[in-house]
Length: 190
Image (cartoon, rainbow, N blue to C red; front, side):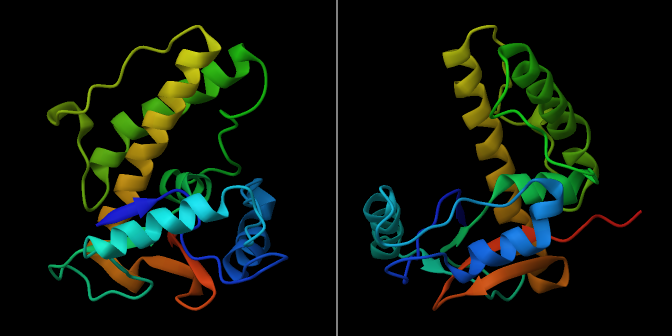
């Protein structure tokens, strides 16, 4: 299972994809809307090409899935709404914008949630017992961006595991195979 933090299906020549509109509808109040994607977007060729390269390697799009079934799948993920739902937050952690100190503080919170809360979820992801080494919080912008990317990738990997483990029972799909889609874990209960 591969979870890509970028639109790999962009059927619309202009405007906004259905999953982008739905992300704004359901997650705008958390400040977790996504950038609109269309074929004219500067990243479109690259991200769609990446999805096609995954398909060529046998990773089929999986906007629907039978939980816990073997196979090679790819999904589009979006860390911000997942972080809100998985950790029961009232808004996103704003680690992408702001002063260095503000971003550093928000990344510290995300690192804490990953280390302390993901091991308590099902499926459990215990980063303390895996080959993932989470570095100390850096103090420079470039190093902070690198850590941001690492933590986002852990969240995406967890979204993939959660989707594979639970399917629609504990996840929602914004969109579909034809219009593009984003998989988001449902809010945690309890």
